[in-house]
Image (cartoon, rainbow over all chains, first blue to last red; front, side, top):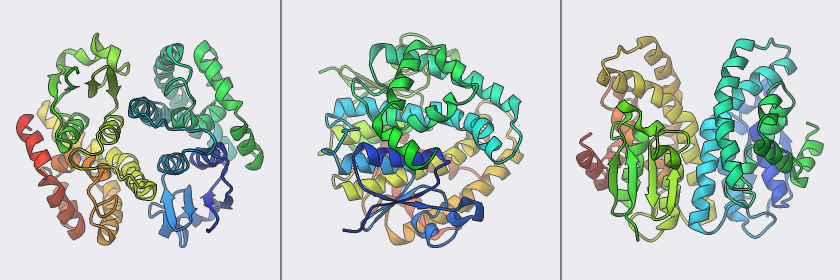
Length: 214
Length: 214
């Protein structure tokens, strides 16, 4: 069998998310750095894997996948008995994980990405942070975190009592945001804050941080 | 067993999407109209089902779900042997469906929603369409449809040779867009155009159009 290859860039949340999922399953993989500064992701051979020209992508044998959430879904379903289950087999429990995975994607991440771009990516690229955009998205993130606080008061993790993809998808985002002024929003909510400590302490994430020198 | 209840509004794509999925599975359900004009979705008892205060939501016995894509995932996984499968059991085939479901969500829908808001929703609410926004998003949609054209040249449906959730999620969006000037973008691409004809002709969608008087 051919080796599993992850194509991506360590600076970006979606790449780290897939690496994290592979680590949770204890899967061996080769990391292939895609040079975004020269637009390698928009050229062959990468564009043949992802016609949208964005990282990450995964090659697992003959299977070629893109879109980070689709890749983690695949890993969770293709390797159910390795490492952490990540997706429950019971359709009722799976449904709750799906709800909170979608919440993460549609409510949390859309706002968080704007904050990460302004407060983490721009400074690294030598660009100037737009504090108006930061304030605006900080205001949008607060009510989402209020709902997370309520949710995490009734279940240990977002998708239920077990760690799942719903939590995993948040880890690289939370990691970035806690290194910025946005940390105050998390600190002000005890359940959210404890959940952040818990998920960031996972050995899988420690390995990603070390391997990718984040 | 308690009846399945779909809470939503017929004007909105996500509500229609869930109704369509229930029809594909041949499931009986009660449609509960949520009066958005009085902000019913932001109040009890609805807010206890979806803390984000948005339709649709689904009650299936004791299970309460929200986020349309999570609901269709649940229906597909909970009723695998009824009606159309919608999600393949084989993890390799399922992975391809996941990729194109994510593409629909992250690349197509984000742009399409802006067009639907300007060209379908605003006129219904007596508001004025912003043609600058339309032009801008038309330009964004074109390259996405080019990628769809290539994809649909090598497989009959987005997620493979069988109709799946990846296609289903597009139906209410395509239906709305084909009633606007954006139709020209679809007509210019023969594979995309044939795919639209095919998926819109499904009896499940005809039932939704009739039942919801769209």
